[in-house]
Figure 1 (cartoon, each protein chain N blue to C red):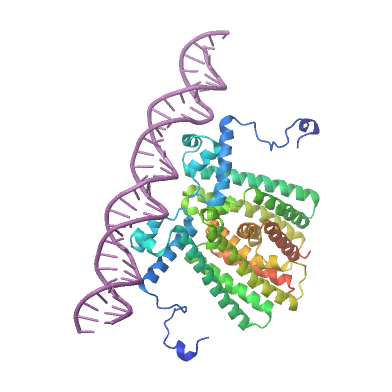
Figure 2 (cartoon, rainbow over the protein chains, first blue to last red; figure 1 turned 90 degrees about the horizontal axis):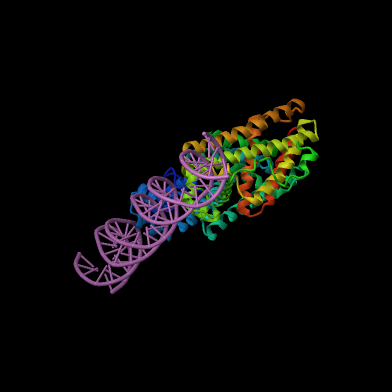
Length: 221
Length: 221
DNA sequence: TGTACATCAGTGAACGCGCGTTCACTGATGTAC
DNA sequence: TGTACATCAGTGAACGCGCGTTCACTGATGTAC
């Protein structure tokens, strides 16, 4: 909600982050490198040695920023969940601005989301939550229960929205609103697997849009 | 297609496998153990040491059966894909027996499949193809391109079926038949992630059935 | 403005463990004559 | 039926490498008086 005046001199991409000290910047850099490696190879196959080599520092520098390897995973997941919430908040806000009707806004949101997902898949191909879920025996319990909380956050967002839609647009068939809320995530996670194994990023958006068509049909678009 | 007479003395679970020599049995046992460990912890975190300890043999015994660790992954994936095709063939055959109409048969198939998926998730929680896809940088190229072939097999099966359905039941909306064919897998893989992270096996079947409702709606059930 | 101390952001060397892989060897079973 | 040889299904010891982690130390920056 920045005014035009205050936005005038702002740098192009700032995202509301503080300038951040030297330490914070290298920590973020390590997290970025870890993210890419974990979604590509998995957690166990991602070595600290490789991360610090890519960051151009010594291994002990890593342990200044992270208590141990599981601490890296925990911080990474926390950052991922927070960033994701921020992105979804932004998309939901934009969609709701464009239409008062919750169903139309939802359909707009799904279209925007399909684009964002495809773009994200090009940068780092994978979902961190799914990655951790698929290797949760490699993490301590604190890390793997974070994925559960992430899922609950997403479920809550969509469940609210879907009930709002149902109130205005009585659905053609009976369905479980929780299941439909979860379905958004299910399709996203599944489409990532498909896109990766088929090496075709466009599948991501195609699957999201197909689900969008189905949702529209359900509420009798 | 066993006759009643020949089935009389057959052991309860045989699955048409040959009696199998001693070597073949321990090899299968190693594959079973590897499967469970890989979907739980990932490939890199699954050590040969741990597998052979569980199988009650020495590490060199492993290398009698497998050229190296990647060979284990390759053989495991090949067996998984073959088993999966066999299961799907069986379910499709049963569904087609119960209804001549391809749409009805498909809906029956999805219901049967939802049950099988939930049951499988209880035994070993995960999809091997998704596991490998998410860690493909840990495997040699021969292994990771097997996942692509598995996806193509599944796509082909459902694409054929969906076109058959479309011919008899003109769909309510325009859609890409390939995308819908892929969607079956997308929902399965995504639902596994959800089920695992929420530690709720029933989500698997709920998601499959939701997709089933959507498919029915699409073809104007 | 200068000095003393504290915190920040690391370095470098060393550790012990476990991993994947190799290699020479072995007892049991199968096959040929 | 006995003997020679081949194959099967492994064993046991050893290898070297790389991993996660620790620890004592360090130069640069910030803060108090």
